[in-house]
Image 1 (cartoon, one colour):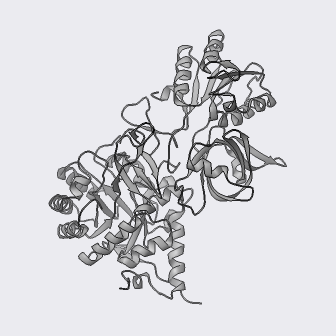
Image 2: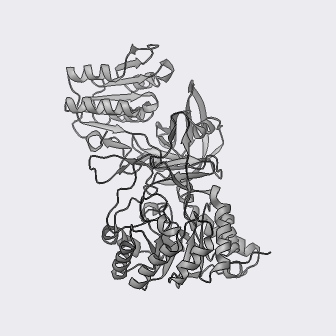
Image 3: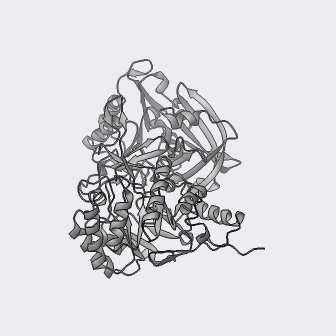
Length: 265
Length: 306
């Protein structure tokens, strides 16, 4: 875990409302795992006051070494709006890598990845590690859903790491199937359940994916979003309802990646 | 080269190597920050508020950002005094930094039982009595806004422990000096202030409070001027050391409190924003003393010119 002042390497518009920001980071990020996140602050500023959490989209390699990280983000409020105005060379205060990560147990051959909207951000990092972990990319599938065509991101990136089957859905029908992402997912799971499902996206989607996973007995890990102030397990602001009613889990240290059945969704 | 200035202070009889402590509820049980902060450099660590039994806390959403501040209604989620003693304290005991335990109860009796238990536990430098949490239904702030109730709690704790005692005061009162005098009379060796100001923020799109508890406690730089004012008032009213709390992000912020009459400070919300804030503040205070040719921090405490 590092807290450091870093420089922005690039900050480019991906498509309407979505940006990709590259920043330098400690070489120790080579040990960062898919699903982990960072907290970003605008140094010495009080508006916004709190850091903002972002999952790591990918590691930036330079001559074989980890030289930085890239975040994929959507402008949703004052923090991300301000971030979208960052330029190459600007300084940011970076804290990370934080939290739990997606696990790929041995003998995992066939996986389904489900991403809703900006939930695609950690999934590219995950997909880039699958092959090394022994997963058969030709047999695996990715399901990407969004409100509209502008909310479908990174399709080609998944193809570039060797995934073959990409299912696309939009709620307005402007691209792919006019449906929720969970419809083609359920069809595919019913046909033949994968060894594991990985999901990240809005809570209703996570809920639906977890339900499908339970019905077809497929192990499932989900990454959830939460407001949080510290990212370190100190503020306890990111309480999440777990299976144990006696105590809350915390998205920052118990998550953000959870086994779906540990959560009370 | 001149000698390094002396930053040490004494709070409720406890010697601190410098005046910078962590505020309860913003620094976990210390270890959460150990990868980022050399905990041995801190003046003191005040741990998350503890109750007799573990407490689940309030439902989410628990926090909301507001202009230059944040609202929280965590609801004193904590592991309970027994799990603290068994699982959290052993690590803290390996540090050279004094550890203060912050306690809260729902009745005078609960505070008294906590004090009794803490008296038996080794390795605790002092007790901070929280009579000011605005986010629990009973107890907490109910004791902190009524001088008689505040007196009763502090008296009950005082009778059960001879550990140094610090009363953490609520700003949600008309006259802070009345409560401050009352807890000192009951036996508090120091007072810390301020806890959060009760606040509220509404999401106008869905017409709901941004916090599930509806109201929360406001912290951060937004409350600092209120806190400095109250510390100054309390410093005129009581003779025990005052620990200033409220929106301290930098050394300059901390110095405002010290000049206004606080003998030490606690850093809270800043730990979330900048985990290294406490260390930056210690370094900044030292640099200030050098720049102004003070040989000791005690020359600055209460030095407000008026």
